[in-house]
Image 1 (cartoon, rainbow, N blue to C red):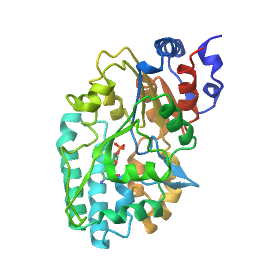
Image 2 (image 1 turned 180 degrees about the horizontal axis):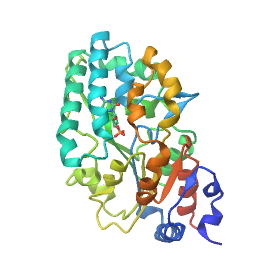
Image 3 (image 1 turned 90 degrees about the vertical axis):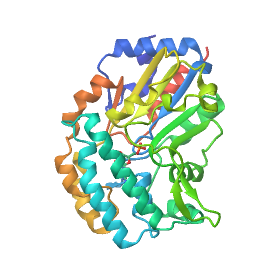
Image 4 (image 1 turned 30 degrees about the vertical axis):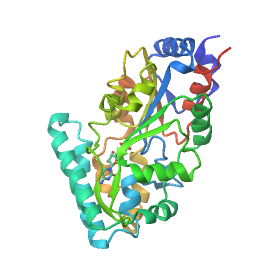
Length: 322
Ligand SMILES: Nc1ccn([C@@H]2O[C@H](COP(=O)(O)O)[C@@H](O)[C@H]2O)c(=O)n1
């Protein structure tokens, strides 16, 4: 039987594909190569985590801090201003990456400096994550456990805050040894107070496997030439750049619903629970407008789907040995 017929989840109404035949070839080729040739590369915010829950937007790893009691009201206001300034630039498809890149570095640098000024303590992060509204997508247990069982590396590339997202995964009980996170990690002084961020700044335009060249992680994944990639933006597609001798890449994209959220964003504005002020949403292209570009770039597009059902079903299929 043809692969797509064998994967029941592929007939869900949320699933879209531009070229099912090509997708079937990729699925077969990855399956034939075996699980020890596979690595999974994923974005974190709004890809492994939910975009919304009960009609309310869920936070990114940065927002977990922005919305917390660790940040003064003045600082929250400054961060919100920065978001108002730079987020429209991040999603502006009329500007080139060359134009946007220095501005993204500027945004991240300003936010990190503000966070440093807040003298955040390492021992406060557990509580802040617990109190936040961040939620991993439904079916995350199966996803993480299956990859762990088969010893398939899960590389999470995130321009968010590594300490926060690692804590999210830890609290969910799925921070297995095969999970490697590449993100912006906080640097705490000897008394446990944030005084810097470690290493090179990671923003939306430089998170990719090639950045791991000459690291131990790179050696561990060098022989894995097949990739399953999960993302929620077109920028996430470059995360696999630098994979050695890439044979097959299966790209699954979450097309999150930005248009449906106006109503609760109005409410969220007063509670600081929303990610962005609603003005961003009015200028943000709606799902229908973005759908074609996602279909042109991702092999599978999941529209308004808050679950891991499809990635899980695909994984079960391509790692089945008989
Ligand atoms: N102060 C900030 C800076 C960035 N963001 C958003 O985080 C996203 C990056 O995280 P990924 O896991 O998707 O790499 C990015 O899309 C920014 O909009 C933020 O919320 N606050």
